[in-house]
Every structure is written in C-alpha cells, then in structure tokens.
Length: 263
Ligand SMILES: Nc1ncnc2c1ncn2[C@@H]1O[C@H](COP(=O)(O)OP(=O)(O)OP(=O)(O)O)[C@@H](O)[C@H]1O
Ligand SMILES: [Mg+2]
Image (cartoon, rainbow, N blue to C red; front, top):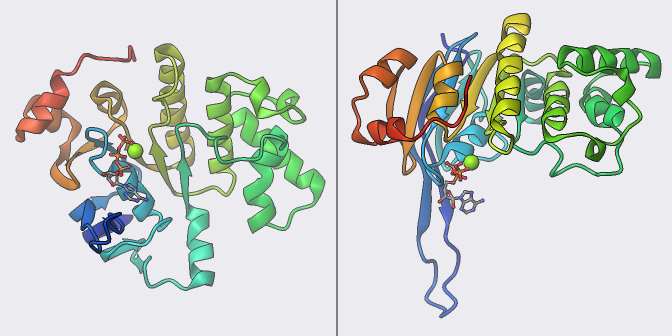
C-alpha cells in the first residue's frame, strides 16, 4: 500500500459567468484524470510548465481544496470521506511548504508564534514546553533561539524558508507537499534549502511531494518524477529513467531547459 493513493482525480474550475450574460463560459480542467501513488519515504518530484496543474494537485493531495471527482487515500484511509474530526487528525500528518512561507501570515507575529501556531492549535503544551519544542525546531532547520522574539521580516529569504519548514515540521508530519520552496531564492541559497530538506527527510522519515518547474532541482532531490502537462500526468517513473530515457516529448523539452541550480 502506498502512503498516498490518488485515483482518477479531477479538479475543474468554473470560468465564471460571461459579462455579456451568456451564462457559464465553461471550465478550466486544472487536474484531469490523475492517478498516482506516493510511497512512504520517497520524494516524488512533480514538474511541469506554469499552469499545468501542479499546485492544484498538491492542494488536492492534502484536501486543502475539494476535487470535482476521484479518490485519495492516505495510509489506506479515504481522505475525501473523512469528517471534520478525522480530517483534523489527518492534517497533523500532512503539511505544506510554500514558496513564500509568510505571504499569508500576520507580519506582527514573532518567529516563535509563527512556528508554535500549529502546536497551539493541535497540542496542549505549557508555555515552557512549547518554547522548548520551537527551539528544537529552529535548531533542526539550522537556526537558533536568538530568532524567537524577532520578526520574520528581519530575516533573509532563505532563513524565512527555514522557518516555514520548522513550522511545517512542528506536528511531526509524515507527508509534506513542498510547492516551489526554492523558486524565489538565489541559486546557492536554494541549494542549501534543498540539502536541508534532504537531511530532514532522513532524520524524520518524511515523504515529499516536491513541486518545481526546475528539472535540475527535481533531478537532484527526487526518487521518482511525475510530469504534468495541461492538467494530465504524462509520465511517471524513476528519476534516472525519466531523465535518461524520457518517453514523452514534453519531458524532453523540460530536460533541455538550462540548469538553474548548482547542487
Ligand atoms: N482557484 C482557481 N480558480 C480558477 N482557476 C484556477 C484556480 N486555481 C488554479 N486555477 C487554474 O488551474 C490551472 C492550473 O493551475 P496551477 O496553479 O495548479 O498550476 P501550476 O502548475 O501550479 O502553475 P505554476 O507553475 O505557475 O505555479 C491554471 O489554468 C490556473 O489558472
Ligand atoms: Mg504552482
């Protein structure tokens, strides 16, 4: 049994009403008939051009958005049938890392509060115990307690991404969707974050769905690679197989792109 089993998944977004009153204008097929297994302990790299449906698939995998149809099982449990209580328990095991971890957060929150927020929501800890956990998390991502009382905007993009990772790790998840976590960073800083993710995977036995438009980054990190094109999965296979013997012409196009990262 795979950790995550996605079957015949569809996500269609309505295009909205026509301004001329002509009714619905159709739909965007962001994810179409996707079936995919993600195995415990692996990094599945998800690549594809902008708008191919990568982020939509990543959000569906965590049930952050509802699919139009299809099924998703996490550890054999039907994610889409889960009620609020079950979903709350499942959410602890599944986290997301974004390109800009602080875009959606209150800028007045201190680093300690940002990283502790999932603990406040899900675990009853004393203030002291919670602070200890936050310090542990900071250290796990290469930072220290001097960050606790400061604000995220006082830090560099790479350091902020480390904080985003610390927050994602707070509940000791099993599965992490990383949606373009290094795309906004300089090449060398991005390489450090990629290496950190690889170290954390070994340390905590994590499974990643790693979304990127950069084949070189994915090639470095991924166990297997899935290629999306216009909402569909066109190719899935071992990293060596996809990079050395791509079957789909679109995969070959992606591989011809200039390397962007020196890891
Ligand atoms: N909430 C939404 N409402 C309407 N359309 C959407 C919504 N979210 C995504 N889409 C559309 O679905 C398609 C897939 O978008 P998605 O963001 O998943 O692509 P992506 O591969 O992550 O792209 P990028 O590399 O730019 O991040 C696009 O056509 C997008 O415009
Ligand atoms: Mg995206």
